[in-house]
Length: 282
Image (cartoon, rainbow, N blue to C red; front, side):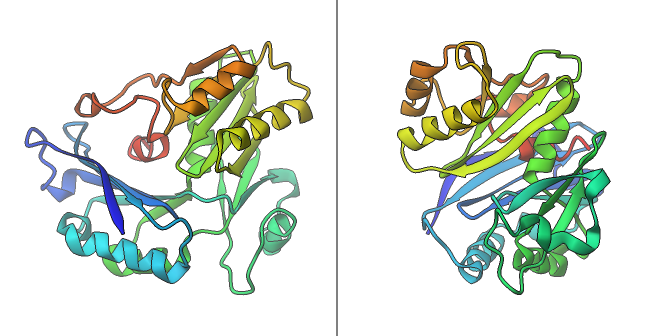
């Protein structure tokens, strides 16, 4: 079952003139989102977010749900000037460039990810860093999209997250922890002096899981909960039980504020959909 979360479309933007438009897509096991961005007008014409209700889905079921969205949204199957796709999952790890060997990709994931024999593994070079992001993409959906678009660009969503946060906060000397929340997972990104200190992704079910992993990470890095600054991103609000639980233990909590945000999305939290909205800026 597919649930519509957000759907915005405007007639003020020429999103049908495909030579001027970029299509951004984000894939995850619990949802699908996309937006059409007009490069000439520098505005979003279409923005849609869908949630998959099943908690655990097989690769085949995942592909079926994506195909169902494509069948009901002909705009997705048009030929765009450019298409980019962000893959969001926890099948990812970072490797220092000095130690990276593209012929040894499985070895980087084998201790943190349960790999299957036929898993396809790839990598992104994180711009302006010495980091290589090694991950398992949704390869069956990639293959489907090759049939639809011919060519497109894809990255792991954490690559987009890390690149943009490092760029935005490159002149910030203090240590900052970003927590990016989705339906069943959250990412922790810690940067200091324009360097990535840590990236990790955790599954969670309860608010107790949520705070446990955050405090455990702080303990491992010897970060003082009284001093650490956390900026929240993604699917979290001040009224949520996650925020209430976090604020009991860490006082310096705020919501991420982007330098710019599309006017058409004025009714959506500015700290949400980071990877989707930062694809078309590249």
